Image (cartoon, rainbow, N blue to C red; front, side, top):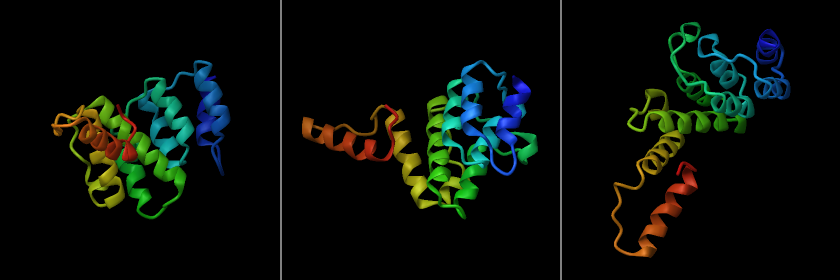
Length: 155
């Protein structure tokens, strides 16, 4: 099943995301060292990316990808590929990064993109549980929450 998963992720000319998702749910051995998270990000497969993260894969630097994380790799691609799938992969990996490490430093690849920088900052604010904002009224609380949730769904 593991080699079938590898084929589904790395299939040319296009990955087979539906098969990959089924195999993850069936218990395929998906491991960090195999670079599957990177492969899914590069293939712009947000659904498989989510499934891998739910299966416990974390975004670590990988030697086959120049020592970069999947987030670094896909945000660099987002500079030239503005597809919705590429954007979704960036956002999924930003959320995953900040859920795992709340105090993560913003990668340079994100700093160079205004849209992703705003998303990172909104997610970071949400993951820090609003400590930065001390509103005085219920209306102010709602306003701050509404503004940040518009950018990032992390609670």
